[in-house]
Image (cartoon, rainbow, N blue to C red):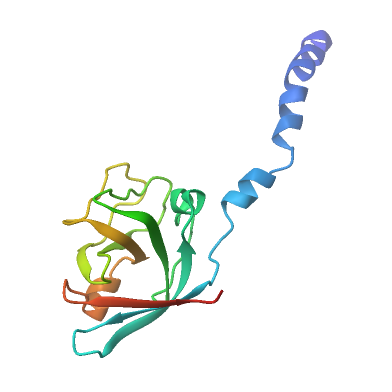
Length: 160
């Protein structure tokens, strides 16, 4: 019995130590919300529907990470994705535990369409109805709560 126990610990010990290793990579991947600017959703008349603090994703790494692993998101926050080129490329919800409204935005800042109440963790691609330059992700229900339509425009400023 003793030899079996010693053998078990000698085989499993290194694996247990690996489980206690530094999780720097994981911590960097879950950096949380970074307030980097503000974004307003605006009616054609110029009236503001809502203003939110935004985390800006303007690099490949930031766009890939998005709101993955974000556990909470208030109606006063969101993420602005700024793409290098205009494209019909879509978004997905992989590793995203929160349902979101995904707002696709044209180069002229006009809302193209809104994918409402997306499914958490889904790998299904959600595509814009026309070429987009920007995408705004907000808490599910935001678009209905604040009356976003395809006539809404967005305006944002960066803290940098």
